[in-house]
Length: 113
Image: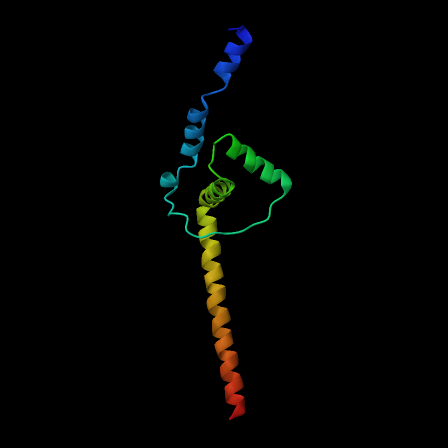
């Protein structure tokens, strides 16, 4: 075997080992995540889809969906306190919106009497 092939062989890890290492970095168990149960459709740029397809082709992930889901979960979990606050504020806004709708409905009903 030539010296160049030996160096390339050393530099490129076993495909299965690489997949296991990458998946370990995105381990669902370590992130405390529930099963993925909800499907979300999205549109993406051609470049992003090419990257997704490359990761699937290399068998790092099983599908485009798995790539997107893993990266989104990782991004959100890395900033969990911030996203928890965003969720709390969104819930507060929703409660105030519903309260305002009830008051508006009551005001319209009272005006008819």
